[in-house]
Amino acid sequence: MPPLRTREKALRQRLAELRGPAVPPKALDARALAALAANPGCERRALLDGAGVDKAKLADALGSPSAFGQSQFAFMRGNAFEARVKADGGAELLRLVHEKLDPGAEPPAAGVVPDLSAVGPEGRAARTALALREATTAGAWTLLDHPMLALDVAGSPAFLEPDAVVVHPDGSWTVVEIKSFPMLDGSADPAKVGAAARQSAVYVLALEEVAARLGDSDAGPDVRHRVLLVCPKDFSNLPTASAVDIRKQRAVTRRQLARLTRVEDIADTLPEGTCFAPDLPAADLTTAVESVSATYAPECLAACELAFHCRDRSRAEGVVTALGRSLRSELGGLTTIGEVLAAAHGAAGDPDDPAVVALRRAAALRSQALLGHATPPAGRQEPAGEVLPEVAPCR
Image (cartoon, rainbow, N blue to C red; front, side, top):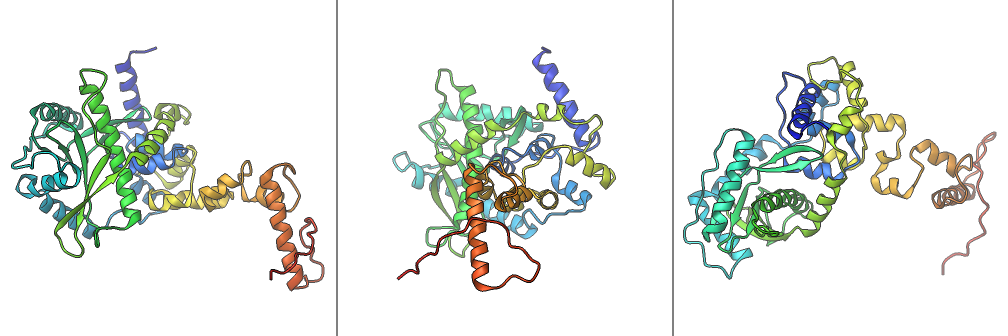
């Protein structure tokens, strides 16, 4: 087996070839990682994200542009709100952390904000780890503004940048997520809070890896599983906060990331010369993209830039996942709509399969309902199905 550094260098070179030699890699952020963890069976997304391919540009080149992403207005509004929250050395942010998560600690009079600047993401990640070590032993409130964390994802490093990490006087660490959606009367949109919790879970996993490396014994510094979500209060620009327990999201994300096929294993199955550079002809890009298997579901429309392309392909192939993951799980070994219809009409399928039994009963109920309300046109035969007994009306 070749040395680790040699294998890592070969993998980086292979991923650069897939991305295109002149194409810079696109950083994999926590939002993308959370979406990737929600669909671990999609090798296409795992490979493209691991190789740093810009999926938005790839979708445009394929002729299936996606509207997925944040508007420029929302981006500017979020930056303005974050700057206000972190003003004056993060005094208001530290106050919120003390109030919501650690009221028994000494109030933060003046927090420490270390300089985390360094060259490249690897340098920033190393500088962040050093700052965390120093803050843990200092015993004072410390605010790390946009630290850089590294997390291994399917054999490829991902560099993540949370909004902030706060080190408490007792040495424990808290992830802070700052969002621009409002918190009305102490509550916010559950869907948006859930998305923020999944992002924060990725940051917590990355922090736990840092803590494990810094720990002198079996247990490193404590990474808190309650994160602080900071949002505008009501319809103002004043910050308010809520503690969010992300233990469930952390467990799910950890399990799903562990299920991801390693990027090098996927890359080894591709034809020689496969490349996803957006300046290639659309036909060549389509061939390259289709050489990697995908697992599309309607949820992808809100999480992946290639969703429109994958949806069109799934519909053309009649894959049942295009109708939703929950339905796919109910159908067992029936993977296409053609197989489902054939099983429902009695033309195929194992009669002992519970999914086939349910489909045939549903087809029989439909046939009986249609016969009771309309006469089939001449020459048309209704699908064969079991004859159901008369059902007494409800009283």
